[in-house]
Length: 156
Image (spheres, rainbow, N blue to C red):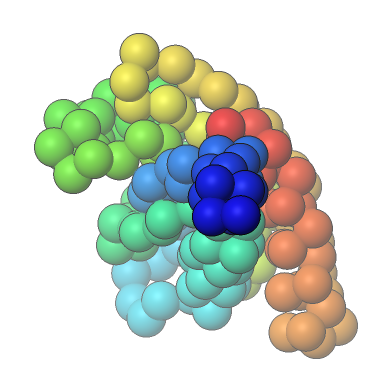
């Protein structure tokens, strides 16, 4: 009887054990004047952390960075490479960069994502989405959860 119970526990923990990835998020605002943090950026950052944490990942974040203008070239890839050594030392498996381009408005007009696997220097996903105007904060958060939820399957 004890062997059966031990066997069942062994199978249960073997089958249902999953390895959580450690993910670090880096939100970049472009096209905003200096000043207080934009509430949309804070919602994006909070929702990124919430969605991936709820999906079973270990999450952390870098402080939001603000740039006056949208950089040219492959800025997100360059940023990921700049963060790579620190990420490796911190045990981070993936870096998720989100660039929110405001271009003078109070809500982002375009959002660019890069999911970067630190080991092997692999771009897992690059995606752009158009920003929207929402009637309420609740509507915005619900939509952000859907958008960000589509990124979760790319981390294994």
